[in-house]
Length: 74
Image (tube, helix red, strand yellow):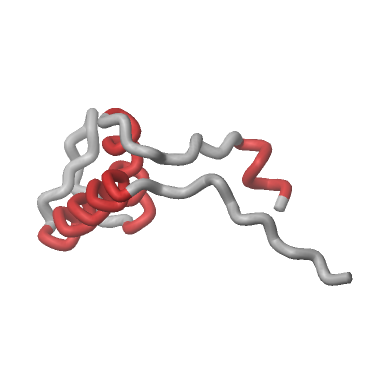
């Protein structure tokens, strides 16, 4: 009997997607700056992380951050 995949409950909300889209647009324009240092962000991954962080602060539906041990296991 084949296994059926359980639908993941960790989904990103529309508000979170909008924040990430806004940040990615800023990155593409070259106006996205990091928090404390104020340096220009060019990394796609860093831009996504900034967008998700802003979404969390705004109370959007964003899954919890992965712990260090979780990344090395899969």
